[in-house]
Length: 236
Image 1 (tube, rainbow, N blue to C red):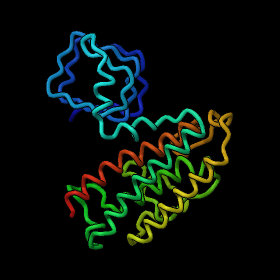
Image 2 (image 1 turned 180 degrees about the vertical axis):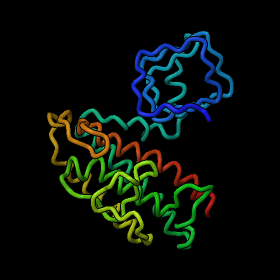
Image 3 (image 1 turned 120 degrees about the vertical axis):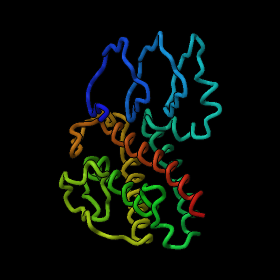
C-alpha cells in the first residue's frame, strides 16, 4: 500500500535520492519549491502558475496564455473586495451556463454518475455544503443547509443540520445552490478590505482569514465546474 501524507506541514523539507515515480500531489502548496537533478517524463501538472521556470526558461506566460481556464483559475486569491466581487460573479455566471446545459438533459441523467463521480445534482449539493462550511457559517453567521453533501472523508464529522441520507431533486439542489450563491454575493458586498484578514473559525479546519475562506469556495466551484462540464459532455 503506497504511503500517504495528508495535512502535513513539510515546508523546507529536503528530498534527496527519493523515488517519487507515479506520486500524486493534490491540494498542495509548492511555492518556492526547487527541483534539480530530476527526471520528469510523462508528468502532468494542473495548477495555478505564477513564475514557473523550467531549465532556466520562464514558461509562465506561455502556459497561462494557452490555458482556457486561466481567467477563473487566476481569480482564486482575490486581493480586495472588488476582486472578490468580480471573481464570484464570473464563477457564478460560468456555473449558470453549466446549469442551463443540465436543464436540457432528462432528469435521470442529472442524477447519473459518470465513472463513479458525483452526479450533477450531487455536485450542486456538495457546493452548497462547501459554501456553508467556508462562508455561510463562519463569515455570514448562518447555518448549514440540510441538503448539503460533505466529501466522503468528512461525512462522520457531525455537521449540524446536514441530513446525510437526504435525497434531493434537481430543482431542490439548484434552489439551494442559488440561495447560497446569492448569500455569498450579498456578504461580499458588505465587506470592507480591512476585514479580509480577520480570522474566523471554520468547523473541522480551525481559524482562517476571511479572504482565504472565499478562496476555498472559489476553488471548489472552479474545480467542480471542470468535472461537471467533462461529465455533461458524456451525458448528452
